[in-house]
Structure formats: structure tokens, C-alpha cells
Figure 1 (spheres, one colour):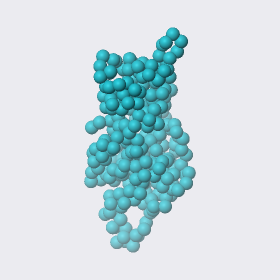
Figure 2 (tube, helix red, strand yellow):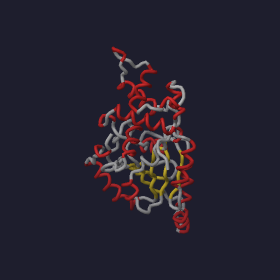
Figure 3 (cartoon, one colour):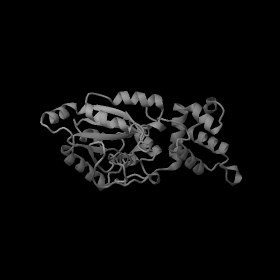
Figure 4 (cartoon, helix red, strand yellow):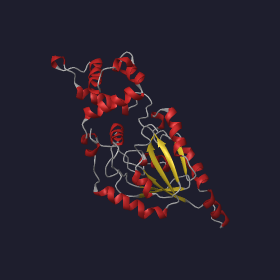
Length: 287
């Protein structure tokens, strides 16, 4: 897969960038959501530039699907003076109770000033940012206690900003997801496609599945062998990624007439099993 072919910047993405810039002055803090399975690849450099020096909370969403060892590494990596990092699952709500204490900690000086002016209890304002399909609307609905933000399991659903009140004293500004104009790093584009942040229909499924075979054989070889009954990782020796894909298809019995392997069906199965966590807790990025 050639990363130079993964380039797009629809008009609504450019509009979103302007919306973010125009509204940053109206919020106290930014809540940036990343996918814990791809904590580097799901961080849009455009957002990092746009939010400038605003205090921020980084939420590593879908942490229960990611490698626990890597979760700890990335949580420590993203934490600094102006940023707190939280492991969470926006669907189950795990970890979301840490958001308010983290906001209070990072905005302590501002909150102290409010209290001195007799403005204790004043509501705070946060902008929620992230790439499409990373869990922004799910987070907002969880914190607001209702279906306030539109949620669909496909990229690019939220197209306009919307304010949502929560029961924790923070009003959330939900912004559309924003992708960047092109992926300079091929791995970034591939990881976004593997986890479903990029629509499947713009990429070749079999090439994507071969990429997954490559990631798994290098990062989680034992997991791959166990799931598809391949024996030991020694079986990878001498096989390229396409041959490994075919071997998995053969083990699953995905054959067509003449004994050929149905590689398209195998590819669909592999991507589905990654996204549904049947391959176990996996993190595709490494520091």
C-alpha cells in the first residue's frame, strides 16, 4: 500500500480546522481522544498544532482492547505539566471518573482564582477533539447521561460543532473529527485503516490484511499462531506476507473450486477479528 495514495482533505475537514481555531478561546481545556490500540497513529498532528498551549486531557480510548504493557508506556509518554493522560473505555465508562479530578488538577490555578472572586462552582468548558470514529460522541453521551451526540460506527458522522452539558460541571464542545491532508508515514495510514478510522472502501482489503499479517508476525507471533493453529512462529520463516495470509485462509478452510485459497474472505475475516478483539489485546504502535 503506497502512503502517497492515502491523501484527502474534504471541504468539511478544512472547515473543522477553522472551527477549532475560532473556538479555542471559548474553552478552558481540550479533551483529546486517541485510540489506545494506535496511540501514535491516531494523534492528528494538525490538532496538536491547533490546540497550541491549551491545557489538555488525553484519553486513550478502547484501552481494554489494547496491550496493557503498552497502555502504561504510552500513558507515561503523554503526561507532562500541561497534559494528563487517562486510560478509558468510552462505551463501558471505565476510567471516565478520572476526567473531572484530572481537569481540576490541571486547572487548579484558574479554579483558585475563581474561588477568590467568589465564583466557586462556575462551569468549565472543554473542547473534545480527535480523528473520526475514535469515540468522541460516545464519550460525550456517557458524560451527559443521554444520547446527545450522534453516534455511528463509521468515520465522519459529526459535521458541526455542538455544546453538550454534563453532570460533572463541564460543558463539552463536540467538534467533527479531523483527518490530516496526507500521511507522510505509511505506517500511520495503515494503522488507521486497520482499526477502521479510514473507510475500508478506499483501500485494498487484501493488501491491508497482508499488512496485518506483517504486524502480527513481528509484534504478536505467538498470538497469531495460537489463533489460527499455525504451530510455532518458525512457520513464518521463508513465508512472505501474502503466503502467510494464504496459510491462514487454508487453516480456516476458506477454499474455492480447484483448492485455491479465497484470500478476499480470509482478509475480511482477519480484519474483523482484529477489530472485534478476537486476536486479543493488541497495540500496533511502538515508541
